[in-house]
Amino acid sequence: MKEVRIAVVGATGMVGRTFLKVLEEYQLPVSKYKLFASARSAGTKLPLLGKEYTVEELTEQSFDEGFDIALFSAGASISKKFAPIAAAKGCVVIDNSSQWRMDKDVPLVVPEVNPQDIAWHHGIIANPNCSTIQAMLPLKVLQDLYGIKRIVYSTYQAVSGAGVKGWNDLEHGAKAFAEGKEDYPLEKFPYPIFSNCIPHIDVFLEDGYTKEEHKMMDETHKILGDDSIRITATTVRVPVFNGHSESINVELKKPYQLEEVREAMSQMEGLGVRDDVAHDVYPLASEASGHNEVYVGRLRRDDSVENGLNMWCVADNIRKGAAANAVQIAKYMIEHEMI
Image (cartoon, rainbow, N blue to C red):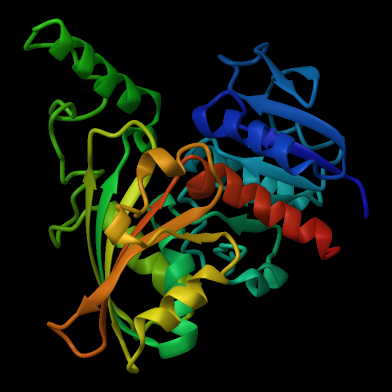
């Protein structure tokens, strides 16, 4: 297997540091690593595979020495500027930002679901939104077996999805509660997240939906390759540190049997079925945290519509929802000699 050269852009951030952990776990055949970040973070030393790497400032010349793959998690504006530069120098960019997801010339990939789309990249591959990624695995099973007519998403998204400031808001809120204090400074959210559910992930648009909700709707169509699926979404931030949970209601095109669904989902790569309610077995955010798999359970009929199905889906939003999915794309490309 060919050895490759990998650059990590945004290495000091929450997702960037998780890139490094996942790369250690996957032990890819890599001959060279380089870590990049902003000028402010340059000089930071980070461990990777038993070595200490010094983070370098990202510049337009950073890719001159040659890389095969660059894992980006530095925000949309950085990706917009630097991803084309890297791609022009022969590097395949796997980008975690929202910048390229809906570009018609950029594949949007979950490796277990649509790896075939990798083949038509033009130097940039987009990582989907975290809340979209985890839903794709069980939905792909249903699409292949029965076809999908309609999806209703309701998400319960952890504060780690809002970065360090979101994490701090929950941590500070819990500390204030323990100390009997009512007020504390907020770094990220418009209201205290501790003891709250906030139906406001990001910017509200003219139709009353948020950008996050539109991401889930639009990205689902692109990944599953079916714009005819009718989709609605409500995305909510909840007081959980890590691990997104989702209630997914699906209207299928064909009749189904629950046992057939459970069996098919148990065979899906990267998808774990936790569905034994008689013994309180169902997916939990605490179970998913620190793992790269998606978990599904609470599978049950929805008799309010024909061929309706309800399920509960959980994943680590920083791992499978970001870093692990990107590294898995790189792994697939290396194993299938696409580099």
